[in-house]
Amino acid sequence: MSHPSVLLTQEPAPQTVPVSELPMKVYEPALNTGLDTSSGLATAGFRTAKYLLEEWNQHNYTRYYEAFADRDHSERVRQESQSLAAYTGELAERTQQDSTAKVGERLQDIHFWKSELQREIEDLVAETDLQAGQKRRLERALDATEVLYSLAMDNLQCRERRQHPDLVRDQVESELLKEAELVRNIQELLKRTIKQVVNQIQLNRDQKEVCEMDWSDKLETYNIDEKCGRYNNQSTNIRFHPSSSKLEDSASTPETWAKHSHDNIYRAEREKLASINLRALVDNILHDTAEDLHIQSDLVNQAFAKHCEILEDAKHKLEHHLKKILKEIGDQEHNIEALKQAIKDKETPLKVAQTRLYDRSFRPNVDLCRDAAQFRLISEVEELTESIEALKKKLLDSEQALRNLEDTRMTLEKEIAVKANSIFIDRQKCMAHRARYPTALKLAGYQ
Figure 1 (spheres, rainbow, N blue to C red):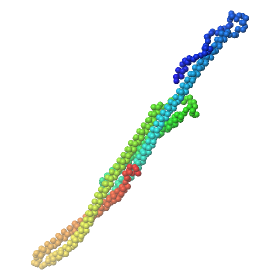
Figure 2 (figure 1 turned 135 degrees about the vertical axis):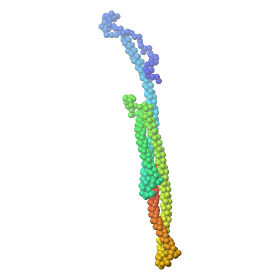
Figure 3 (figure 1 turned 90 degrees about the vertical axis):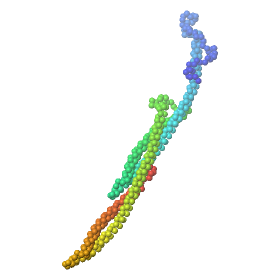
Figure 4 (figure 1 turned 90 degrees about the horizontal axis):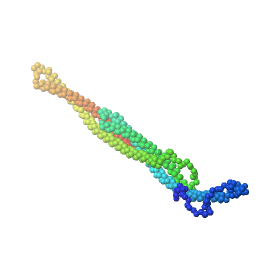
């Protein structure tokens, strides 16, 4: 169909018109107002206001021509109107179909972005829930480390009650101090990680809210466009809105509209990826910290076990020496008694010898002779005196040895008591308390 502007300027098609309907020759109208007319003066009164026949014919012809021209113009206008009406009707129908198709395409675009946003929202919700689970694991692991720190400090405080000389900075104390420091460092790491997780959860929720707002706008727009797509010429709820064809100054373009949702999805994907990486980092941190704590715990337990073995061995050796000391004390006491008896036994022979010498000193005159008997008696007294002095000296040595043995016995008994106390502290207090050490699952935050 031709364009309406072409139709309006197009010449009408030639038509066959009857001869009676063709325009006649145009005559100039004659005015019968002069005095010298062919009528004469006798009819002057009858011709004042009348036309001639030619004038009447001319007047009729003029009316015929006007009627013909108006009818011809009307026919052309009617034909053009019919053509224009048919064209505009077809154009309106085609334009409406095209607009409906465009609205349908727009619905597909909106549905695509709405679906993508909905998927991102669901992914962010799921990821945020997983991240919240990691936060709970970190908090449980942090609570478990408090038990570890209290165990280490309790062990150190219990071992402060050891007695001298066992109050030493041994391998067990060094490992316990390492354990306490390790627990403190891990607690600081877990606290920093919890802050990162809380911050990531907030970022996930903020981005989810942004996507939800965009999704809500898309849903409302989808419903509006879907309603618009159902409108047709038979709809009953349509009416004129003259000002609706004006474009809003704040309206976006298809490019900026798509970029807005694309940027929201991109930021959501970025936060989701950051959250996934953080969850993996949390898994590694919990695994590594739990492993480090158990390794250090094993070192502490090994140090305790080895130290207890050393203490047990020292205690057994002390008890063995104490047993020998006690036997030696008994033997020494018997020895002292024997020495005293030996000294006492030498007194009678000494009395006999000295009495003999004393009585022989009363021999008269020349009989007071330095005979062999006299010399032997004198040597006997000297020998007995020396023996008694030697026995007394040995008795003093034995008594001193006995006192030394008693001191050693007391020292050994004290040392054995100290070792028993140290063993009790390390084994019954410290190692028994360490039986409450959290499991690997608890340190990993699963319980």
